[in-house]
Image (cartoon, rainbow, N blue to C red; front, side):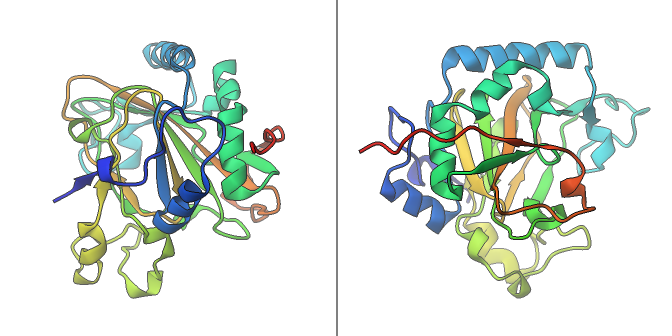
Length: 275
């Protein structure tokens, strides 16, 4: 049975600008941590308004569910549901509210604890608003994001901000604790580098999965090596999530790779560590 994250690493409220030492240790051990109420409600609402407008007007660039060919997605853009948007790409360029979010003290402080004081946000990966919609949303299999990224080291952190309630029935993210520390040679992946859920070598890990149920303003931080997945949205409402990726400045993308295809954003210095 899938567990929810209620008994898993979750930060206390109010969050402040930094993790505690215990929370940093939890992230390093488990590969993820949830911070409740990290984003201000007014900023969340502004992001939600921008998202809805850009969805309604299909403001490019976007990715359609039909493009990814995942289980549950429409067969093509010409089929029923073929123009269901899976994500709004290049979120950072869509409105200043997203810049305000990634450069906020509560984000910079925590990210500096995980990655160091010189922080960079790649624009080639994530940098999007996930829009898991009813009826035609797809199921994303178990994977590590690093499978198609190219950096000197697999040392990056993702931040997943919920703009709506994220629960099992609308496709909240699932994550496998401690999978960022596994040896891939001991497990089975398919040709597309998805973790083979039915392979006996993988069962113990898959059975340890949790559901990261979130409320608007909650943030899930997870390691780029952490295995994660998501099911379809079987509710009647679209679920919106903002996702960015971060790296330390000295962990550069491989020249000529997809990871080096777009400029990157050097983030401001983090706030001073609180005594």
